[in-house]
Length: 312
Length: 259
Image (cartoon, rainbow over all chains, first blue to last red; front, side, top):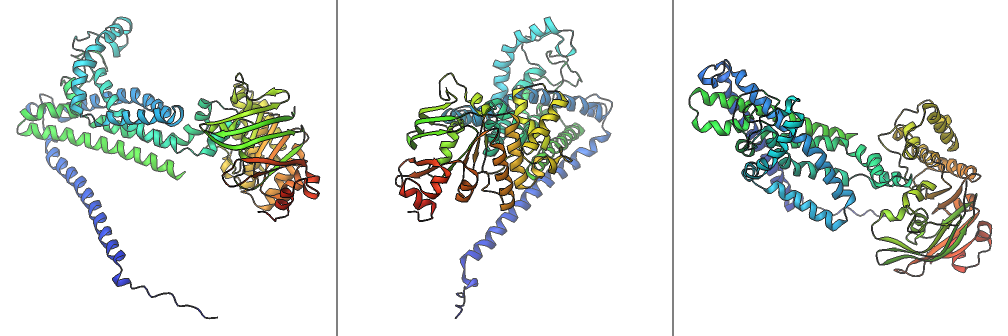
């Protein structure tokens, strides 16, 4: 029996190989550019921000030291973002479930588009909407809270007639973070293995029970990382908050007043950078460094939870 | 507890597509009924129509009647969820819930029906169900391990334990052994023979020897032609089917002269 020799492939002349090399080069280059950009930002923030560590008095906007300046802003940033997540996360999970499991396909498609459109609205538009529409319409709600739940520190008046409060900022951020959380949850829900959903249905589960038995356990880590990525978005949001909140350096849990409400790092930088000079610039950049570290940590946590979910 | 099923003039559609046409049969209580036939002939679809599982696919609907102990399954007033609590199902690939322990898997269905159960009742039910599925001795020392840590055959028996824990009247099995090795297959077949005394069992199988070994009655499904709907060619006691079938095409299929 004769064995036919495999046909000689002329590797040198194969265009596929050249394409391989070029493509590998391009993708490696892109990866390096991204690393350099990130490192560049980090180096810039460290270089410009760290000298502000010793700032106090005038250079720290009248505070005794830099931490007394950054802390209220950091607090405000976290408070606004947490309010946003408390509102956005259940809403986003609900909408994602409607799209993936409840609505008939045409309706789900349209709903998906609408949610994606929310992501395309510029943040300054959200800010304007926040001041001109949302804030004003929330005033009666705040007044009601002040009257009926004023004994809780969150809801102590007086309520400003402009409605520009921490809670309004949180609401605007919630709407802005909605699309990313919904999009990720929708994808994860839709990937739930059919056989586990059928297992639940065959046991006599209603649709909601099926979702609790099969979909949520499968999607838990995905939902968690979706919320953290949404949180990352809310932490760094600038324009919308800058328009809604007045820049004050106060640590306060109060959600519905103007005088005693905190501001956020990003908004504070946007509002003050134009007038800043000398060491005040360093101070603002240092607050930017703090925000960078926090946002980076939140995103990193989100990604690592998502990765852990995929492994096991 | 076990109930008989009467099917008359059943047509099953996916949207406008007629998948199975004109099925008439009586499935006896406390017996094993097997469906055989080539792939795509509608035997799984028909099986799923017996507990309305096919409705999980949008657009699926039926015409005709399915009566379980005199009660029509497709009355508008009948909730498909209630139907599935009475008529359990075991699937082709073992599908224990991946995040749950063996113990929790067995209780999953029961937890839906009865919210509160005392620890001792739950323990007793888990033991009874696992014993019923011939799995108790193998897993009794690791009930809190994940269900996915078991072998394929054990997982399938866990799924059977989960199905019988809700005390259904009928147990539907959709090629329950097709993903298993011969030893595990034998274990499941033994189990089917035991379960027959308590449940009405309907099984779809591609393995003709399996149908001959485990079933009392056999139904042969086939396509009239490519693109035509599937239909029931012959339904007879298994003995007769495998020795002296009424239809020539049944004999051709069983003896391997298929075409």
